[in-house]
Each structure stands twice: as C-alpha cells, then as structure tokens.
Length: 287
Length: 278
Image 1: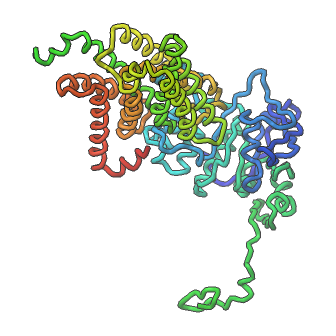
Image 2: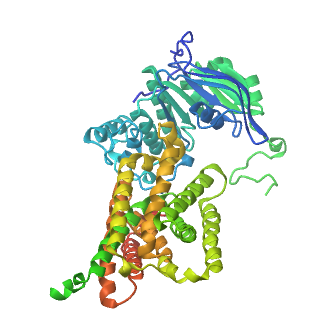
Image 3: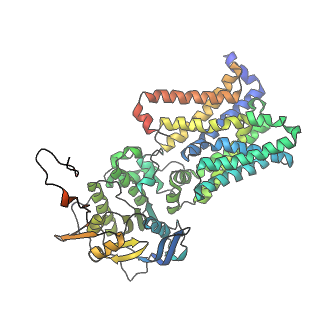
C-alpha cells in the first residue's frame, strides 16, 4: 500500500474525451421536497472526484441517480452504453445487514455474480482471486471471518474488494470513511488514489474535507445545487465552503497542505470563564 | 430390525415418508431466504392466503393446484412489491395481503357451508392421506423449485443481502423477486396438503434459524437448513407412527427440539449466540 501523505496529482482525466456520465439540468424531489435542483455534472474517464456537503443535501441521492437507482423528475442523465459502462458501488456501511451470514470472501464473490457460472458455489480460481484482492488490501487473513467480526476499516475494505473484483471502469463510493478511524481513512484514500492512477474513474461522497483536499484532485461542493466544482485549492475556500455548509468555515494552508475546520463556537464562555486553577477545572458556573 | 421396517409395509406410510422428506427439505431450503429477508411470518401468512385461493378454486371448479398456485403467486408478489416500493414493513404487508385473502376463503366457506369439511386437511395437514398422485405432484414441484434456486443461487444471495446494490452490479432484481415469489408460492402449495396451514410457518422458519445459529456462512446455512428439514421430515414421520400423534405436529416438534438443542449448545458459548442474532 502507498505510505505517507500525498498531494493530489493533476487529474488524469482527459476532459476532451466524451464523458462517461453526464447530467443535464437534473432535478429530483421526494414528493414535494426538492432534493436536487438543476444539477449539471460531467464525469470523464479517469476522473477522481469527491462530492462534499453537509448531511441531507442530496449527495447519496445524486449517487443513486448516477447509478440508475433513481430517475430524475426533470432533466437528462447520460450513461455510456456502447460498450456498457461497468459500474461498482460501495454503499455506506450503516446500510449493511451485519447479521447476515456471510464471510468476507462470500461478500467479495458477490461482485462476480453476473460474470460467474450458474454453479452455486464459486470456482477455485474465483475464490483465489477474491483472496488475492483481500490480501492486496491487507486483510487476506480475514477471508473466512464473518463480516461483523471485522473493524470498520476492515469492513470498508471488504466492500471495496467486492467492487474491485468486478473490475469496474467507474467506482462509486458513499461515505467510504464514515465511522472509520483516521489511519484507516488515510489508507482507504491512498488506495483510491492508487486505483485512479491505474485509470479507474472514481466518484465518492465524503464529510472528510481534509482527506479530500489531500487525495482527491476534483471536489464538487453540493447543497441541493452544485455550489462549485474544481481543484481543491480553488474550491475549498472559506467563502465557497460557508455557502456549502451554511456555517463559518476556516481554511488553513500550511506547508502546501490544506486544512478545513468549521470555526468553533465558543458560546461566549471564554469571555466569562476564570483562568483554570491548579488542582481542578472549574465548570462554567464556577463550581 | 423387522419392527423398525414395519411401517414401510404400508403404502400410506411410504407415500407420507417421501412427501415429508421432500416437503421438509424444500421448506428448509426456501426458509433460509425467508428468514434472512426478515419475512418469517410469510409462511404463516401465505399459507392462509393460499387457503383463500383454494376455496376460490373449489367454487370456480378449477384445479386446486392451479387456482391456489396463481392466488399464492400473486399474493407473494404483492407482498414483495409492497415492501420494496413503499414504506410498509414486511410484517405489515404480510398481514394486510394474507389476512384479506384468508378472509375471502372464510367468507366463501360461510356462504357455501356444504364443503367446510373438505378443508380440514388443508388447515391441519393430512400426511397419512397422501396418495401416489400427491407424491408425484410434490416431486414435480420440488425439482423445478430446486432448479430455480440452483440457477439463481448467486443472484438470490446478492438480492437477499442488498437488493439495491445487487441492481448496480447488473442483477435483474425484479426478475429474481418474481421467481422467488413463484417458488415460495409453489413450495407452500405442495406443503399445505402435507403439513397444513397451521404448521407451514414453523417448517419454513425453524430449520433456517437453527442453521443460522450453527453457522456464519450462507452456503453452510443453506446446506444445514435443507438437511435439517429433510431429516426432521424423515424422523418426524417415523416417530409419529410409533407414538401415534399427528405427523405434521411431530415433524415441527422435532424441529423445535433441535432448535432448543442448538440454543443449549450455543448457550455454553455466549459470544457465538450473540453473534448469531437473528
């Protein structure tokens, strides 16, 4: 696995090539509640893009529209059909039924469902492939473990392995680092960057703007509509992020790295609290 | 040895034995998908719905298997589609569709009282009254059902685990659901004559949850549940001959006993029991 923090390399996508996904004036609503409004988005071969925005602004809905799981109320969605686009999807971990009796290897093999034979059990070569991918992701020894027995980072890798065994051209991930500790998040983003360098197109949603800034070369800020999209250093500005997240955002640039933080709200306590005293930390009511 | 073989002298017992093993195995197989979809009560509900279909078939003077089959298939499909496309949970959908269907049967029976008696067997099962024709029908249904499950095994697994994601990976989940509704209805229809409406739910659910307690692998769960269903069908029939109690009840009691045994064994490994939460 790649080690160390990397800056996003220039996006390798060729913007002159016809996009594999194209959304034109797309609107979507659940009943009378408008979720997405006038979305125009292109995804080119080899692009690596992150959809950023607060919860409930339509990130997952946008992914589902791209995947064809939802149909827009208005507008047009183009997906390359000739040859058919091979898509793999890694859903949010919280949507998974962790009591379902499947081992890591069985989950990975689901990715071959449509390409495998009609024999109910997998061929030896398929099982070997699944184990190889798990090994490449650093969890080869967990192939026979039940999915609930794994840590969040390991679980995420199992579902990433299921996507990879399908050899997708477009990999779509919904919050791949949600509930995952920081080193595992770093590892997952490194893997995605590595996959992108092999030519895979990747689209993900994330709340982790710092990881996106460090690893993803194209960021799309979404809040019902697309607020901005472009390279992290042009999009992740205090003004655009404040418009996206609706709060005051702080962007720090240091040693070529970019850090994003919501400006903490002090509730005015700092003005009234006494200085901490040795032997105890007083509460804000002085006790 | 002769004493042990005594029951096999009787044709009704041989027929019943074959029927019980096939139906037990079939329910064990289909039960895995039912339990994992959180639709444990579909066996109970659908058998009631099919009872309604059987009465309608009787009134319209059409073949029982055809009438009940179409009725059961439509009911299973309605339940599946209601769950997939609305905010209604499986238990509520099963409740609405199947009780309404059962009510049709009850309404018709109360209107045409003359045939009330003939539905006793459908309600409580009549394994000892199984004829060679019934066995032929069970065989004719069991093999296509097993073939469909075999053919769609991987698609069924993926759809049961996560239908939405399966769709992205190219699985035609609508077709898989339709086929599943068909095999479920078929399994219940052939079981209804053997186990009766009242016992089918247990025969569908108990082997599957016992298997779930014993393994964390889907493939092994399918194998264990099917084997348990067939084994309890065989042993239940055999025991019922000697203890002289209803065969359907004996089969289900044996399944419940094995479930308790699995619980008892796993209770000594509490971590395993918690992991196998169903």
